[in-house]
Length: 193
Image 1 (cartoon, rainbow, N blue to C red):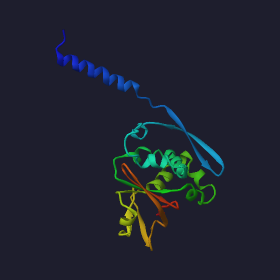
Image 2 (image 1 turned 135 degrees about the vertical axis):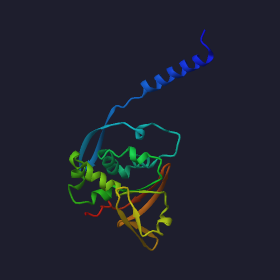
Image 3 (image 1 turned 180 degrees about the vertical axis):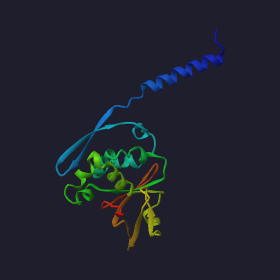
Image 4 (image 1 turned 90 degrees about the vertical axis):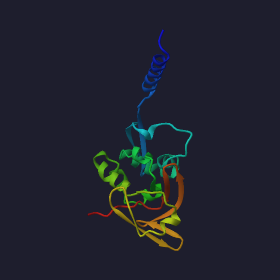
């Protein structure tokens, strides 16, 4: 007969093997709306961004994915393969342009950025929309600039009760489990060097 310690170790080992073999990373396709055309890309679901969790407060990525006004942003995040970065513990502030903000860019810009060969440029633009921290719109009024995830600074301007980050007006703010999502009316483009 096995000693109790060995039996417990054996049971735990079998449970761990069961967990490991039950995890799947199946490819998923993502469709981005762009000027009436759909661009479909196969997306590999790997990393903590793809772990199902119905019990905790949604993170910044889950909030964007759950918003019908941010489908272009989500498609861009997927094309740049930044999903896992947006589910980190943070805290993160994401300035999330609406679909209308992306549509206001010059014709063909979004389609061009979603191409695989432009992944680095797209990632740079998206990282310019992310700041470490979890600051309310009111607290942001105290800042003149913010350091962004792409290692550049973005200007903060206050006009009356409105806060503009990189020229984009904060329309709404949604608390997240790992920070806050500030909905903005423009795509914030980093300065070219």
